Image (spheres, one colour):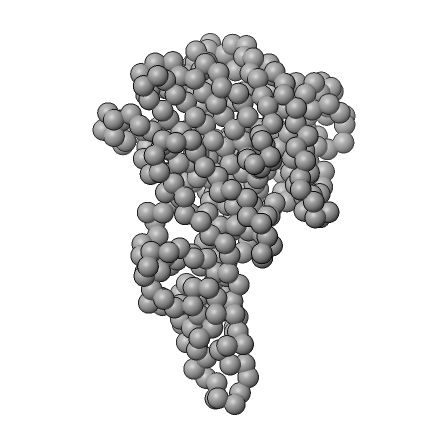
Amino acid sequence: MDDTRPDPTAHTAPDYRLGVGGVMVREAWYYALPSHDLARGKTVHRTLLGEPMLIGRDANNNVFAMRDTCPHRGTLLSKGTFDGCEVACPYHGWRFTTDGQCTAIPSQAADQRPQARDVRTETFPIAEHQGNVWVFMGTKGATLPPVPSVPAVGDKFQMHVSMIFDCNIDLAVIGLMDPAHGAFVHRSSLWRTADSIHEKHKAFSPLADSEGLGWRMDRHKASRNSRAYKLFLGGTPETEISYHLPSVRIEHARTPKYNYCGLTACTPITTDRTEVHHVMYWDVPSATLLKPIVRAITKRFLDQDRRAVMMMVEGLAFNPPTMLVQDADTQTRWYYRLKREALAAQAERRPPRNPITPVILTWRS
């Protein structure tokens, strides 16, 4: 089936989710937490892709990530202590440096095994970039792709909002990227009314290989029902939106005077729980005073998306037949197609190939 002009009777075709639905893609960076949530000399617990993670910042302000279970009895290391250099298990006092090396097993005599030098706990590549902490979930020693990055609007974000969606990663991603739900899920007398729906034509292109698997909605003048951007940036902006597999959406809106960038990252906690992060950057001086209002609006938007996705979860529990329409659901098709390609490339130990070609899509929203 052609991804660009799909058959409107697509519901009779094989399930587009077959083999990849609910699967969590590895060999990728996942958003862990904002930098300001990780103080020097402190650690936090996170669960990423079903794996327990201890994320910390040492005395020298360097971030690190290790498996949050002691290799002795599985106790959570995050329940123990951290002195800025070493983590100590609360059960038997085993100690570990931030690179995973065990340095002390108090119960062992000198002639017993194992000794501390024989034991390591798993660590994970970690990066701190533009105010965000990312963890690479993949094969040890793998070549690391670039960390997700927004265009230059400074290296410090103005706002971070997150919310838990009780659904798998797929439903969180496609629920947020869907282009036709705005007038219904986010309806408002201030910025988007029911009668604002009109036909849109948008050009799309594949991401460059250096950007990873994904696509871009090419730069265009914002739609006339994007009043929020006009108010915030003081004019009608040009907007570009890119999607990077497995779960990052980056939007850049700009006018001749100001810029706004939004980074949305979906991080699977487990197979049926996802944390959605939305990070906002801007260079509008007066907007600092509006932060409480912007935060309230952003949380409302995100919760509207969460509730919409949960209604979908409730319906899908009955395993109904579903369909994808032309052209509004093309990005959903692309998502599953790229996910299938990423998993195949990993299994075959080859670079992934982006199957998307430039196209103009049309829908009403």
